Image 1 (tube, one colour):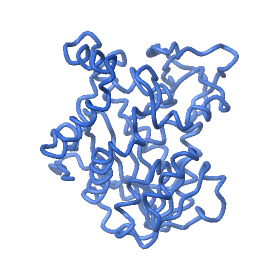
Image 2 (cartoon, one colour):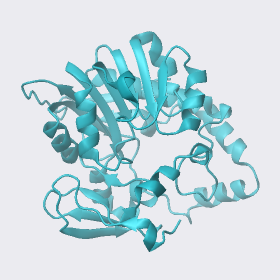
Image 3 (cartoon, helix red, strand yellow):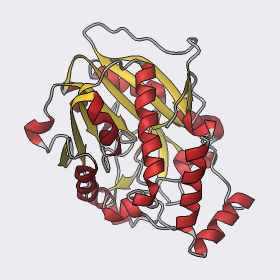
Image 4 (cartoon, one colour):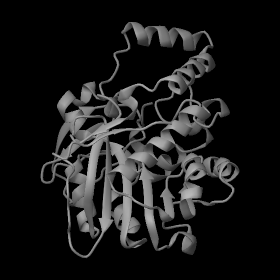
Length: 333
């Protein structure tokens, strides 16, 4: 994917509104990741115009193709139900382990095809899901008919998503939004006092450690606009009146697999021969029998590919990091 200049715009740091940046890495789609010289936030600059960004989240985003650098390969396919169910349960158990004792009234922002809602509905007093993809919302309404789903951005869906909610969930969403600062403040406004915000995102500290040219978060998922360290998320949360309860990282090392490796060459050959469905079926079978630890373990360090963070809306900042607590989370499907 390459972008014409007329489809791009220059932006300032969303956190401090400054335009003094250092270049970090040019992605394979020829867009540049930069770092704010003042606060250290990493983001794309220039980036696609909003009207082109929203076009990315069409039905094709959830079906993907072998050469498409955005979206998911067959995410909405019924044959991938095992993977989706494992991922939803993993997220729910990690949230509980980090400190969410009960869900209560729950809002999921970026609910996608409703897989989390389908397993969470019995545990929540009510569940509301929001996503900008009409295709995803149609599937979500079928998978979790007891929940309410709305298509649009959070500030567009009206009173239905006004809350206040006991728990707000937002997994792998904040890196997609145009303004993370406005996004977090909007979520905080919809939380009850003492309510919880649970979010996850790729971990830029992992990219810094590996080098962005070796990091999965910079070499794939070209729809991502921002790249967060835990301290970036903490700053956004604090500005919105939230304090961190706990955080952990997981989902493997984050190292980008070289396309010349034996595994990658074999996989690309199988895809070229039309064996994509069999690859996913085999993967699901393996996951249903034995879960690889790198997919399900979260630890109290900043080394791994994804951040999973829990924030609470309180009047008094009661921040507590999990570092030193010996946190080790292993989820079971």
